[in-house]
Image 1 (cartoon, helix red, strand yellow):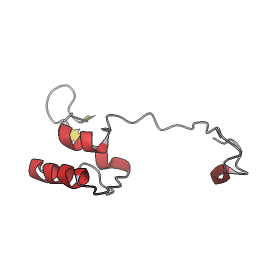
Image 2: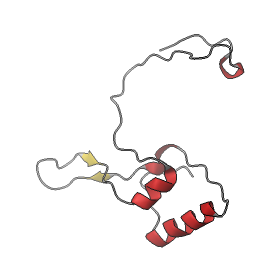
Image 3: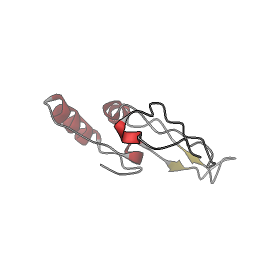
Length: 93
């Protein structure tokens, strides 16, 4: 799955748990583990929150997206330069 802010019903979460327990496989990408709500009341109106809803769903995924670091350059260092996947790649920003 590749979704953002899509949370299955509790019945669907339970079915997914049973399917995984029976050997099913699931590859969840990017924002599948996100629950986002735009705040419309109070002093934080217009800001986003990541409520801890759907704990079963997040447990199945193994994580929940709660916030994003600031958008900014960052350094990528190659931890194992001899690994074939990164052969010939130098550190970069």
